[in-house]
Amino acid sequence: MTTETLQKKLQDTQTDFLPLQGTDYVEFYVGNAKQAAHYYMSAFGFQALAYAGPETGVKDRASYAVRQNKLTLVLTTPIRPNNEMADHIYKHGDGVKVLALKVDDATSAWQETTKRGGKSYMEPQRLTDKDGEVVLSGIHTYGDTVHIFVERENYSGPFIPGYRAWNNPYFKPAETGLLYVDHCVGNVGWNQMNPRVQFYEEVMGFRNILSFDDKDISTEYSALMSKVMSNGNGYVKFPINEPAEGKKKSQVEEYLEFYNGEGCQHVAMATHNIVHTVTELRNRGVEFLQVPSTYYDDLLDRVGHIEEDLAPLKELGILVDRDDEGYLLQLFTKPVEDRPTLFFEIIQRKGAKSFGKGNFKALFEAIEREQAERGNL
Image (cartoon, rainbow, N blue to C red; front, side, top):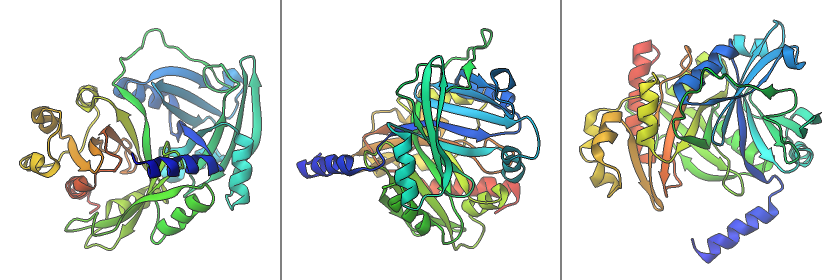
C-alpha cells in the first residue's frame, strides 16, 4: 500500500461521521423462527446463542440468535397476526429485514444520518438489564430493509437486553469455518441504483468503490448493473444491483417479482478455507449453483498461479477470480427459500478486494439455468 493510499485511508477514517466497526447481526423475518434457527445450525454450523419471546417479556415475537465466529443471525417470527412483521412475511416471504451495524455511538449515528436525509426507523433507545446496556437506533434503506445501529460497549450479556442465553445441550453441530459478513447485496428496481448510491454517499458517508455495467454483467439473455458502496474503513460493503435490458428476464427482475419489491439478495460469508467450508455445507444438504466443468479448462491461464489444488475446486464448483491485489475463491448457494429470492455466497479472499468480475458470465448462466427450470427466464 502506498503512502498516498495510507494517508487517504487515515483521512477517510478521521473525517468519517459514521464510523462503523462492521456488521453486528443480520435479522430475518421468517414464518417459523424455531425451525429456521435449526436449519442454520444444522446446515451452516451456527451455534445457539440467545432467545427472546414471551418467556423473556417480549410479547409480540419469538427471536432466536445464532452465532458462528463473528457472524450473528437473528431469526424472528411474529406470534400474532396484523403487525409489521407478519405483513413483511406475507409480502416478501422469509427474508432479511435488518442489516445491523456496530457503532461506538448509536445516538450520534442516528443524528448524523437523519440530519442528512435518512428516514428514521428507530429513534435512539437504551435497553438495560443486569448485564449492562445496549443503545439501538435505526434508519430505512432500500425497500422494507432497515439499518439498525448497535452500541454495545457497555454490555456483557449473550446478545442484547430482552434476550436470555439459549443453549440446547443435545444439539451442538460442528462449525463449518464461516467467519464474518464480507458484504450484503441489495436488489433495487429499474433506475433506482443511482438514487440508492446517492443515499449511501450522502446519508451514510459511503464511497462508490466499484461499478459494473450491463457489458460487465451480461449473458446472451439477461443483464444487470451494479455499484459497490463501502464505508470509510472498508469494514462494511453494500453492492447495489439494478436490472438492465435483456432478451429475457434477469435474475434481479425475478427477485423483485417474487420478493414483491426491493430487498437483500444475498449475504456473503467469509471463510479461510473454502474447500473445507463448502464440503461441510454440501455434506449437510446445502445446495450450490454449478458451472460447466469446461470453466476449469483454462482457469489457470485466466487467473494465474493459485495455491489451491484444482481438482477439489472443480469437484465442488468453486469459482476463482483475480484482481491487482490477489485472487478470491467464491461459490453461491441456490435460493434458501421456496421463493427464488435470498441466497448466500461463500467467499475466501487471498488478497483480492474485488467481487469476482471474471466469474459473472459463468455465474449468471448458472443462475439462468435455474430460472429456466422454474419457468421464470
